[in-house]
Image (cartoon, rainbow, N blue to C red; front, side, top):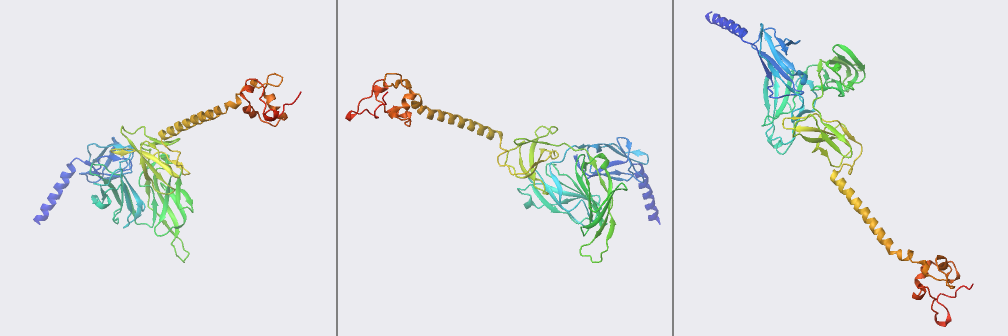
Length: 465
């Protein structure tokens, strides 16, 4: 009896003391830098009962002790407070960076929403080396480390690993290096329902094109899918996806779907119907983005990126993932048919991928560096000049025929000779003017031809007048 009394006193004392403690806001995971697309959880510590949340002194529609926010964007920056029993916490400042972290963690196989006890395969990509990198998961209020095999990180820039089977409703994954660099974070949600509403694990950016999908576990034979946004029906068709051509602010909201389906191999002919849970689509302004310009060759720039930014190039073919394709502010390699993009990279961040340039054919010589193009032009000019000089040299050797003074050829009667005189040689018009080369020096000087043996003149008799 005495022990019970003491326990009750201690309990009352604990409640009284706790109610008098000032509320305090904490964040999990405890990211040193919060990037665009992260999901964070705020907890109002030292609180009991109803909690009120405020951002920049404005009350929010949130009254839970733990507030999950994400994926976040720049508009989520501000001073956060929680209020409990009439007391407000100190400001907890969150500043969301308008760019992405220097490494990427993405879903290699699986979906952002999976069934309970399911798993996904994640892929980590870094710019330099995976040495010293580790991965983490936040679930059930705790952070746990995921060890990467060292032999798979040496001299590698990417690695894939499978998560443990999830029993929690939500899990947040991310990776970090020894120098406090980290990757994007991925949020995986679970559902006990057969029908799943698949949505982006990160925010949808204004102007983007995306599709929301209705998935049924165990089959792809969906004959009808009805999509709802904030309890309002927006689409009803035989297609299992809802496509948005141009994301706007009006597209943000909570989506769910209702599917009519059959299982493969079913002989009953009976269809089933199921409804998914709601999933929220976050819409945000596009963060810092690189710009790709394609003329004779491709260049990459980023007006808002910090000083010292370098550039990386990426390439993919139809329905494949982006693959690294070199570095530098100009792409000077031969191009294969496919899609190209670039981004700015610096120590603690990366820009969004640039606009995409599509190449329909292989172009081995159209994207050469300017120096190569300049050298080819110079060589071309040299060859042209050389050809002109050679041509003139050759034509100069033939000038002895063309420039020979026709006035030196005399007719028999002492008149001036000329071209007509040459054509009359031998009494025919078929002899060429090159016969003048057979003239004697005397004739060339205007004299008569010497007589040949037998009294005949060389070249035959002249035509008498």
